[in-house]
Image (cartoon, rainbow, N blue to C red; front, side, top):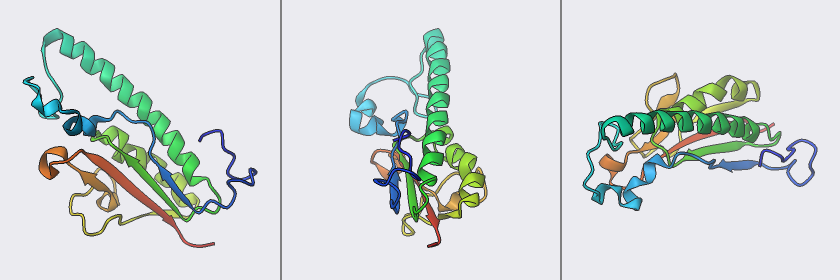
Length: 162
């Protein structure tokens, strides 16, 4: 996807809609994996805990999430760069703020320069993004515990027709 030239490649120059579902931590998929059936202690974030090994694993997972988020930011900027795109949807199956609200917030100035704004995705859904930046109430979150399904996140960028 990142190798596609949205401006000069005739196959992609007229793209109007982009659905970006980039690689992510998959942290929202524990329910379908059956993680809740395991008899392991978890912390407040639903992460398994367990001594010194846990500390090392936790640090490794944080680095992994940061690496993924950097890729997600790059991919979202690229998706927004399609010159005729009217809508770009950013979606993950992650519950981590770093992969969701932080990624969206990091591209907002770029998106606005290109004429995009956040739009209210799935208006009837009540669970919204965490209030980490102005406009986060337009984001969609699904919480595995509260909604009894896998967790996911969604942001809808729209651009006025040119």
